[in-house]
Amino acid sequence: MPDTGPPQQGEDVPGLAAKVAFLRRPDSYPEETARVEALETHMSWVFLTERHAYKLKKPFRRGPIDYSTLAARRRSCARELRLNRRLAPEIYLAVVALTVDASGRIGLGGAGRPIDWLVQMQRLPAELTLECRLRANTVDAADARRIVARLVPFFAAAPRARWTPAAYRRRLVSAVDAAAGELTRPELGLARSDIDPLATALRQFVATRGEVLDARVRSGRIVEGHGDLRPEHIYLTEPPTFMDCIEFDRGLRLRDPVDELAFLVMECDRLGRPELDGWLFAAYCDLVGDTPPRALIELYKAHNAFIRARIAVGHLDELNGDPTRRWTSRAKDYLDHARSYLALL
Image (cartoon, rainbow, N blue to C red):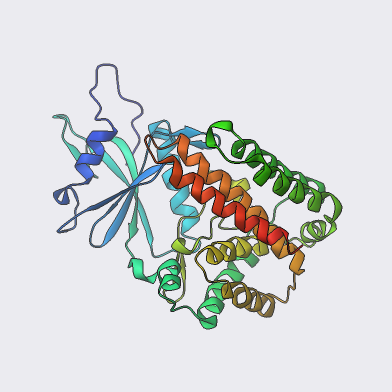
């Protein structure tokens, strides 16, 4: 469907509230569904029918994320579809127009004027996520190996980053600096004594022991990966399915596969399942023949935990009225994990 551009002067375009109200109704969808579950995140709304999921991006802009215009949201939906088909080709189905006709009626698809765009996905059972399986204590080493076995050819075929070792070091330190700046905002009430030593330790590792990072760059290990390998994004289907990669910033997808797995391990640690560390990295070393130093894994885990603490408090700027305690508590949890990993270096 062509994008006919922005509305003309005088046109009455339904706002976000009207779009959400329409998409909450079961009769709005081409397939029959008895109910619609609506889930709000800080950047989007997701509507779950019995068979499909539809993601509507909010008119949102912050840093590299720009969903502020109709054209930007369409581009983002197309990019999300393309990138996620790399690891979930049968799940990411289409980009669907939300339209309005001459009488002002909203429709999903159809011949009306596009007023927004949605990513349509096949819905998978929530109980198949790695997160649910971890909480139920039904994950074993064989599951971990299946996860890694699906990722290995993906990483092998992925484009390589064109970075020098110095540029890679700078990127890691820059992320630490930005996170430290956010986490020490006075209004958050987080103690600098809990944050500054972690940031210093991360910077010092890069400065004094960075040869291990340089070796990763020189051996072509930094690739365009997924960027957000959290347990809730992994479904233990056959083969495993990986959802919701980072679509808005290619730089955040350029990662060492060991970094991607360390991020996943860190999140599994937070769920009380530290054994995933051994299982995932044993499978990775066996299938790839790459044996990263343990210090590198712990550095990546600490770095990821520190950055996730920043992302946690960032939610306070994006969701009106969201409880401060929830996100600051989560940030403290990430900082505690970062501290425990750095103690092992």
